[in-house]
Amino acid sequence: MKLKYKQLFFLLTDITIVIFSYWCAAFLRYEADIPAESVQNLMLYTSICVFTAVILSVVSGCYGSLWKYAGFETIFRQGLVAALSTSVLLILKYSLFKNEMSGSISLIYGIILFMLTSGIRTIPRFAAWFKAIYLPSPDNLRRAVIIGAGDTGAMIIKHARDTRGSESFYPVAVIDNDSKKIGLKICGVKVEGDINSIERVCKNNRAEEIIIAIPNASQSELYDIFRKCIKTSLPIKSCRNFMDVKDYMQKDKIALKNVTLEDLLFRDVVKKDMTVAREFIKGRVVMVTGGAGSIGSELCRQALSFDCELLIIYDINENGLYEIDEGLNEGFAGFDKTKYKLCLGSVRDVPRIHEVMEKYKPDIVFHAAAHKHVPMVELNPFEAIKNNVSGTVNVIESCVKYNVKKFILISTDKAVNPVNIMGASKRIAELVLKNMNNKSGTTELAAVRFGNVLGSKGSVPLKFKSQIAAGGPVTLTHKDMIRYFMTIPEAVGLVLTAGAFANGGEIFVLDMGQPVKIYDLAVDLIRLAGYEPEVDIKIEVTGLRPGEKLEKLHEELFLNDETVNKTSHEKIFILKSGINDGVKTESFNACLDNIIKIAHDGQDEESLRKAVFDLTKS
Image (cartoon, rainbow, N blue to C red; front, side, top):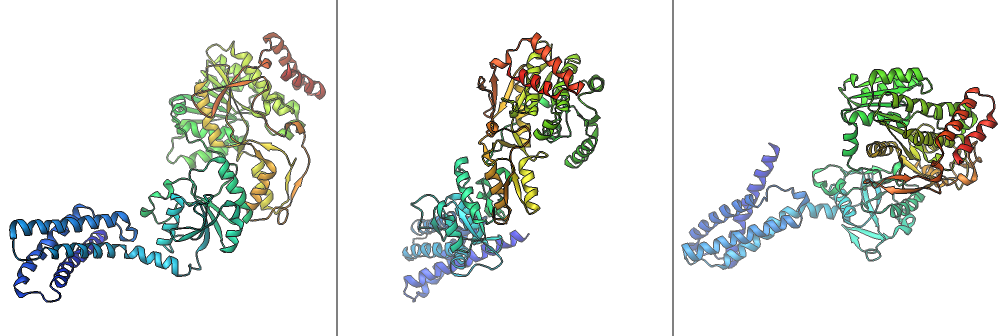
């Protein structure tokens, strides 16, 4: 109703302008002395003007736009209305009426009509521009430097200035690496330099925040921009998607987001079509061992979202099972709790595994249960082998016994040339899978290998954030250590897709993106929190932990003798077998049985370590 009243007001305004324009044209034509005999004809033509102008305005959509956003399109429409209205008058004059009225009145009328109708519609834009340029910025708005003088940057500036006060920021300067733009103005805001001058520009303009508006920037470009922006210690926001602002006329706010840990690590989060993974999971019974862990719980969430027939969540962690149960109830409103079963049990407990598989008969098993923290596993090698190696054997044998269609092992890049018990145990688990695949019957066995995930319990970024919150110091083991990172949802989405590709015996490797230097990560997180490294928050190098060695400062994704083949997914690769995978089944089984026996005896740690690393290198 409010919109209809506005449109009626606009209509009446246009009628007034039309009448004024025609009589003003006649006044000018007759030099302020309109003949009395022409008044009747003027009234007739005025009626025609009103009728034609209103009809043309309605047809061309002149009443469907907001004046505060009037631009070239609005002016073009008004010009079209004025031209057509003038044409109608001239056609009628020379075809039907053929009176003594001057044709020049119609031409002058068209010019005045165009000027007034387009002028009145652009007044709000002009007022906003004038206010933005010549009036001081409101004290309650944060002064922002915009990085990017392209379309996205222009839209952000235009919207912030045209809707002065509706946004929480006020653009005061622009940064762009295009030297041709430096010194010019974009929507009234000057481009004051390139990214190398960001600190100077922010200081000169008393900036309070930085907004990155470059949706098509590459990873390397964003990395360079971010590393220079963060030195200003100002809050950094981004508008990475042009869609966030292109329909700004229908929004009250521009969709900006704070720079997150994912942005900090410059991971291009996979947003590929998940049709393959969905079809792989839909309608099937899925079992996840270690289902209460970081990766396991996300596997459970995505399996449910892809409409599995039934989900079996298997874990020894009672509190973890309780937490995932609560999380699923909150995350899936109105969700049917019969879609999943919580099963408390260990992968070391063979009868319990058999009991669960016999009862629920899973089609797909994701084996995420493992001891994974390097220092803790290094201090408890017997438990690591019993869980990571013997537990994997137990689950695979049970899968084969109960005709599970697919078994997917969640492995790690630490299995590549392992220097610690955790990595070695996962490498042996991969070798177990490859050796058992040939006698697995209808069960297809495969593994997916990837690096560190953001947000997992005990991960480096979370440790750094908690240390920063406590006031420091931030501790790291070595200044040159480099690691790969990806988000948990991204990793799990790729695991599900890789599982759909599996035919048996493959080890899949995920594209982990660019490696991140841990020291740089610590510096960036400190600055993101608003502190200055080594001034407000100290960074201490504590030395390598148990299980870490200098030669493993740089993580590897595959062995020296391994190569990879592409799959139909750009982020998933299949390892071509290396010489280490050619261990004879008989000798491998003998070594494996020996390792498991030593682990269960729990007495001779030196013998265990030797046997474990001998097998990974054989």
